[in-house]
Length: 138
Image (cartoon, rainbow, N blue to C red):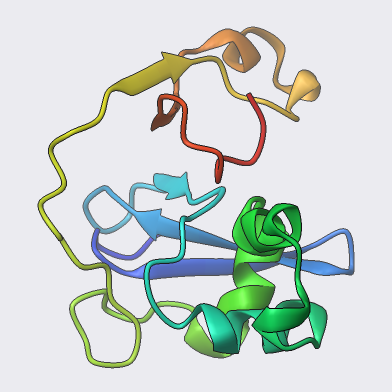
């Protein structure tokens, strides 16, 4: 997380799960954004196999929506682990693509799952697309 912005920060939590973050600050400043969920637009067949070990045709709509709707689920569906830590996110290994979607509203709200963070738990540092069923939690 102390790398220059634009690289991945992947860590192992609770001895069970990986979490994927995007480092956002200059080198030496530990600042990153946790990617909590994604809406699959391609590769969902492979995600289903990686995440739930089933063919996509066997899944209900709810199971499809749940493929990557949480930090650990996202990492499992994309096969993200510590071998992909500190990867430049403009590389051909792991990248974030700007597909120029404009037709949505962003919701800004408080973070979740961090009651231990004292006053920081109330900071409005969580963002998601309004009415998108693929978000991790509302």
